[in-house]
Length: 342
Image 1 (cartoon, rainbow, N blue to C red):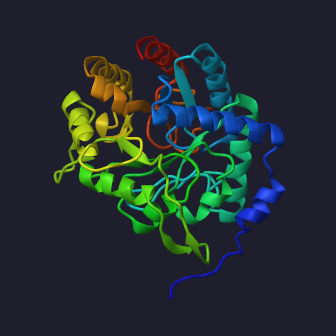
Image 2: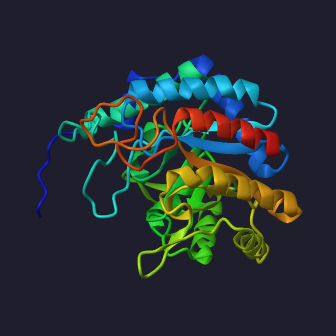
């Protein structure tokens, strides 16, 4: 086999013991978890925003960003639940390019998996401590979830992973709400099948053990747009799409039907400046239809301190090195506009 062992990676127990969550932060996480759960279960009228950079590439910049989110959360606490998007693993369509902090804690240096796992946990804990906000991360590698499961309040399964058996089964044992994105093909049925799998218990192999899961009743949908056979983006956030998803949700019993709308990716054709317009259209659809209002519990938005994107090595503090993002001024304005309309 063409494998060369580079080093032994510390276990999640070892890293969690080295960087534990304090009692104060654990209590804060419990409060945040309850608030998010109440929105997804429909017992709260607040609206969720999973918001932050495309990829969390720099601890100082990420924490500067989330500290700003923490301040604005205080202004909109009666209407919005802000969940920082701190994505430490970046899926790559062709397999090349920056794969996230989990691989490269320093984007300008060689991959270092052991140091990357330490760096991502350190960043999540620091962000929580400084902002008061527990975060979301993508479960790109299911075996690694336990490095962060005591810190996160929200987990996503991406469009390229949602059809994978291991992702679906692991989601069934995750303590946090798991948003399952529609696949890049756009097939709602595939996404709903993933939700069904995640909401039921299973027996499978995980981290070298045979495990049994109890099912995750808060697994739900995320619409992120689709790509057709010609490589063209096709949006799925429109009124008709949301109405269709509501109807499909009703076809068989599922716990707590819910959906978030990803305002970037194929929904915006990666035109990041379109995100505010898309957000306003989704909120308009919620006002037009009680059923859509019941279904759509929040939005996902890509934003950072500085607008746009940069090349690795440009060293612009708080600007994305992967997909382009909204800057903070536009983000601040958008959060307040959403709060006024939910």
